[in-house]
Length: 199
Image (cartoon, rainbow, N blue to C red):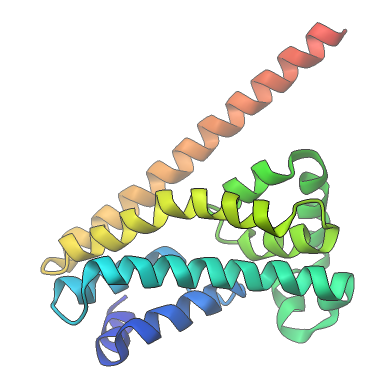
């Protein structure tokens, strides 16, 4: 995080935007750490936190939309591109495709909170063309408006105490995973209940 803070302090909004764009392509830079770092430089006075939120939302949505359109334009041929091949391995692609067939836009929403699979889900949504771009952006925005402001404003608030901030990031990540687990168990329970009713 210290490296990102130093880098963002030098180049401001543009640096945050382009790093978030790279995150959208599946480059292994944690998006939450990037957002928090953007908030930190605002807390240190280098940028305005509200504009940082706008830039961050824009960077996230543009990055995600780029993956969608790459899938939509090139289809499965995009999987042969070297950079994409590293992100969307055959195993990952098959897993996401199977889930997408069953869950559709619901998987899109959850993908915002799944760093390892996020880019692949957006790619598959474009390849399958089962979700229109309008719906894709709407669902992605609804998910992003939950997570992005939390990380940016947390960074702004904790800018003067990085040790405390890192502890809060870890705690926040654990809460997100716990909520996803509870949500997954609830969906599984509903599915089992529906299956019993049909039987």
